[in-house]
Image 1 (cartoon, helix red, strand yellow):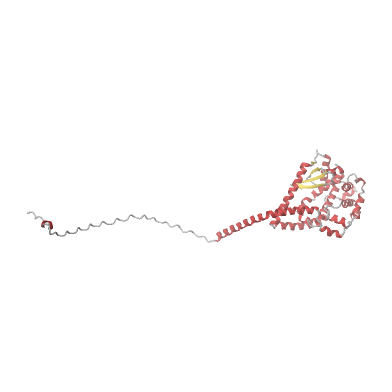
Image 2: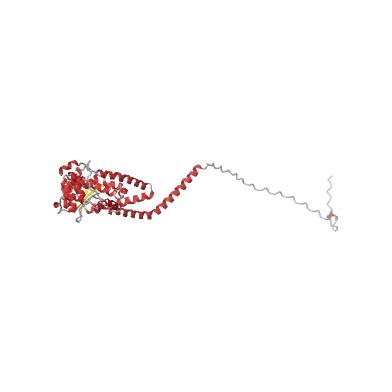
Length: 376
């Protein structure tokens, strides 16, 4: 099956259904984000949710940097070389940081992004099962690099409103994972190794050599009942049997035929909340509670500010429209110092009254003396 990888290239790896789902979700999400932008309440909710996601992702990256081993040329050099080879084969120019995390038996890996940097994390138990420099581990690294290459991490933030739609959001997630399996197959350089890596996720390291991948792929076609269909529709990942069938189908057209689902499963899946949806709803509920406590104060402050602005604008308009009056000049008052009043004229003394004649007196007392005779 190795030769069948020749039909794969970075330009043909993305499945058409991923592009179709993306277009539908993008249209729905744009309308939702526009509704958020035009409403003050929506902006507050959006800002709080973004802040909460940023905090959670920051704590995750902090744990990676302080609690896990960073893979470098000096630290786990064979795994580092396999990582560089996978990035080169998938045309990823900026190599993401690779970390090894203790997983206590859990077989998994993931990619994340924070502050403009991409990170790939591989669990220790999966590395022990696949080896440090094998087609299997290159498949695993290529799968995670595919998420980065397709910008799934950024797209999921853009499509967040649409991803909450029942059935459609999960279908897009499954399409993304199926696309990244094709990226992993190309990075592995060995389709048989890619299939073995996926079988290891299903059966474990010890049992994988005894598992027939084609028989496991046929299990996908054999089990199409109601509960299996319901499980598939409610999951963001294709089942492991389906993923093995997809990889085997790259080299064998017999395994490319579609398989139907029980129609009643769609109805039940539409009303079923997955764990991821519950987490999102929980976050939205927390944000709503915080917003309900803060909004009254915010609305009151905004209302007062608006009223003050309205009064200021009204005052400015009145001042601009009122007739301009030139103030009258202040009259110059002449201060007159009053002169002192003129003194009143002195009255002439009244003439003395003539004394009455007294008969008891001599003549000389009653008659004036005769004037002297002029001298000769």
